[in-house]
Image (tube, rainbow over all chains, first blue to last red; front, side):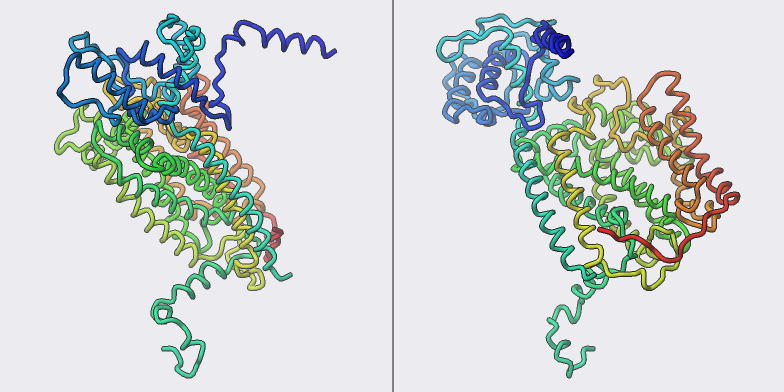
Length: 205
Length: 407
């Protein structure tokens, strides 16, 4: 009786569609961002997207939110400064306050590509839409980034992580919001119960 | 003058003798006389005040960092959410607070219709109440435009076009909002002057506190709202708020707070459109109006008007009919529970309003028909059904004593 049902569920769970659907833990009610995934996603963005697309809402120093240290951010901004102005010793260096602009070398084709700051809010399925878009129109080639330990992530991981990073860019305070609101609700519920019964006690029959 | 021989009068502090705040709080808030059947519905008024004050304080905080310029507004909101300490929390409280305010306001209006809280000496309080609701709507529209996204720009264009259809003053009114000094041109319609929108949002926001104060004052002076819709209450049915109903009011406030925080936790984008993640630009044209939920009923009504002018007219007619309700309802009984046909008509009204809200964003011929029929019912309910039913229906006998007050 129950076997066909289980079989059906298993078939669905193992179907290529179900396997292909990316899972983002932070889209669940109390789920939070995975910092390792966000850092991989940022690396993919730098390697494969940043040449054209800016994320102007995010400043380099905000990247502490994905777990980068201030020293690493300063190192990164110097690398970008050297990349953008080759050989230049003078000029204003990039500061951690700068925004994530498109990293076009000087003289390159400066055709405007859309800013990605709020792309996951604008798309109907959020980060899953990014994964679908990348797979359909702009497949990422493996090998553009190398993680610590020499691992080169698979295209599926790269799609997933860059989508997660873009979701973080659109909503960097999601984790804080969930934890503060949950605590506020627990406080209200306890305070409410105590207050309600205290006020009721006052009533004379 | 305090009696110098009375020790309690001498003990009153200097300020309290001259400005009796504590006495006013005691008489009009803590021990305010309320009917014995003070229900959860009666808590809506104080809760609306809570939502209004939340919006005022968070609004002032947001105003400190908001730049009302065509390209600066969108970016300044992002700065508020990312660089201002707890700016994201303040903005979440403000935008989800609007959802809470409108939910309470719609429920309060429906409760007033059910209990007949617009008649028998409450006419002025009711008209000020309708004015307060209209102000909520206008402020909601202005606030949504201030987000400066693609959906905001579409709404501002629509608002200006609707305003421009008002005879005589319309063009001038629209031009005043658009920031153009002279004639209104089609080019200007796409670029509302955000400085004026923001100023109007702030100025009318503070004016709203005055209107809300007037609403509370007129309600306090009118016969107290009660479940039987009585104009005159038996003195034994009037009790002090504390301790009789304070626990219920407290529970209602805590429940509203829990729903408020749960909405921020689970659906922070509930009333903001997806399109508003894209900055307003002449190139970002939405294919359909993407409105916050509390405007959808009015959008459906405007759509049933068939034209811009017809839509404006229907919305104006509805608000005027609401305000004129005390003179349209001629029944001997006020509360719907003693008027079976009137009660059914009211439930139909609620259903028609929900259908209008859904139909506002549908494009099929069937939904177009449903929207038109719903709009017809909403207007006919006030203009025809209410007077007719109230004249023809024989209400059940209304008890002169109140029952209830269980919690």
